[in-house]
Length: 547
Figure (tube, rainbow, N blue to C red):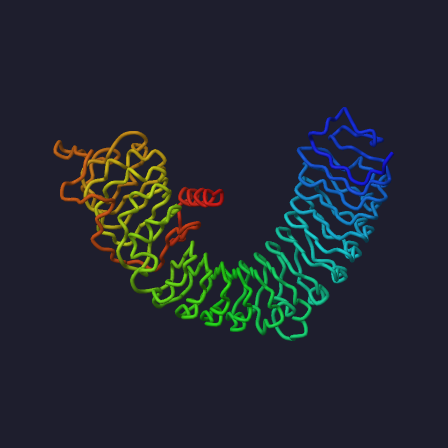
């Protein structure tokens, strides 16, 4: 019999017929137990279910790779997993494993890759894991692990990819960890409760410590309790850093000028902290930036002129700060921009022509899904062509003091949410609105609309709140009855030109923001959306992802 070195098993393997090389079969969950000592790899895939309770790890003295990921395993990780002492790669991710990580895991001293993410493990991390000194990749994310990192983690000197995201881990990220992780390229600790200052080994003097992290490319400390200044000091030794995510912490102070040394940086996300400086012009030296998110800090001053160098930027979020000044000087170079969110600042001036001396610019956006320009202090014209934009699912232009006629809207055949409240719309409610079968949210309140409200299809499901504040509207659901000469809902006023909007002017009386969904993203200007509106936005985003 030829030696068997690898066995791949899936749920299509006939459970009653097995290969002659197989000595033993356990059918409870379609797993084949092979007692041949020459087996080095077992890979099980498909919709299998069961536990590891009956897996005899001692039967596989030469097993180097065990892949049981995503097969609906339940129960605990058995203690005798430590008997598979030659294991180099152990993949048990995306199952329903619970309980603790057994201390016997420390017997797997040849282990290089351990993937236990996306389970329900709820213990502390055993210090014995630090005995697996050959570990290169360790992913424990997406569990409910608790407590601090064991001191023995400083022994993992070959670790390059460490993922501890979405757990309940706590304590300080002690300096001796980072100074020993000289091969580290990716560190993901988001959504835990780590505390303390950002360790000096990541971001500040002494420079000798930076040398230890010279390979770092990805750092994610999102959603912890880190406080203090943001990465003070010099970044000259971490020039490979491509993604830096520190959002949802308690960082304060300034964005240091030395951020400009990170010329490989592609994603910088610092949102929802307490940063209170101006934006340093040196940030414009990070010309490979694709995502820049500074949302919800206390940043002040104008955008630096150097922002025009960010020619690869696709997503820019600056909303909920105290930024000011005009925008027009920087837009012309942002040719890849898909998402722009700048609401709740004090920007001034016209809507930049680079976004929209619109007709040709917006009309060419074939995947425009969400348009939100609500509550802003910008001015300028608006394209009539959007009435034919059949991809639009959300339009929100509330509280920008529009004076306009509503006209042909029938081509917006996938529109789900329309909000023109608190403006100065005049004329009739167009009957075409009643033909939009996906329209589930409508708000035309507080305008100067008149005449009879259209009826038919599902349009009569909208309540009085959709139309309040229009004194001359009549008919259901309003209590005001229509006179005979007002029953004219199937057409538009003769003095109105063809098109969607006959915009007269946009006078802005509210505070700040500009949003338009561009190409593969969307821009949102307001922060307090009704839940239905938020759900529609999320569905629109999923449509973009599927494309």
